[in-house]
Amino acid sequence: MEKHLLNSPKHLEESMDEILAEQFLTNALLTFRRKQLKVEIDKTLAERNKEKFLRLTEELKSIS
Image (cartoon, rainbow, N blue to C red):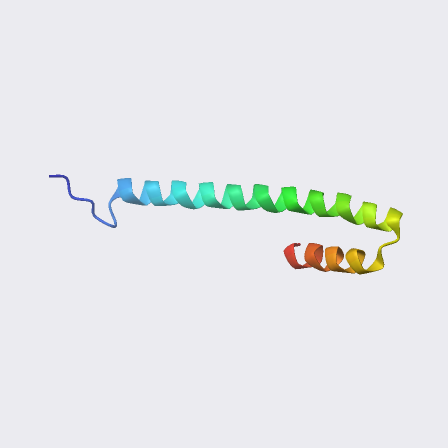
């Protein structure tokens, strides 16, 4: 039976890998959403949709 100690080098390495993977995915999703919002904002400007523009710009500010 193999024991997994919380402070063992193997456990720490796996924890760091999980943290780095999570940070990478979070960053990728935020970058994607920012790009999406900018495209949508451009559309709302062309459509002169003030209400949607304000909502989208607020969302963009909140994730930037």
